[in-house]
Image (cartoon, rainbow, N blue to C red; front, side):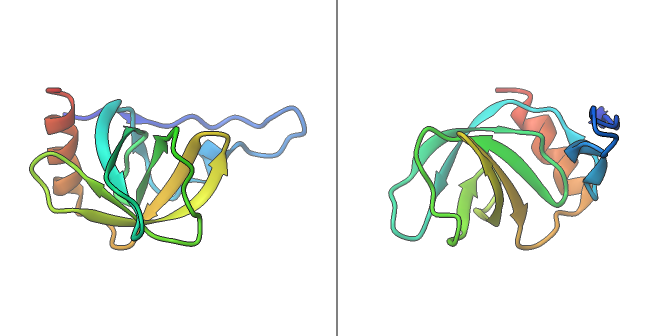
Length: 114
């Protein structure tokens, strides 16, 4: 069973934080996965904050925000995503096709075993 990570608090200016603008609850995970873009080789990155609509990842490799990223998760086909925001080495990505909640549950259970 997964525990969603949701936190909604106004910042000092009274504007809602990024967590409150999310369309879907995210699950705290931390797992090394493989990522590539169309013109790059496969490399490792750290996946976190996974949801049916997207994820956050930490990458020491600079990525082109205009190109899709392709992530490889254990036991699943490669998934494509758009980079929606970048903060230093953190990338917020949105899947090109929303995951079914059962698929998300499966991914989380597999990732937590690593």
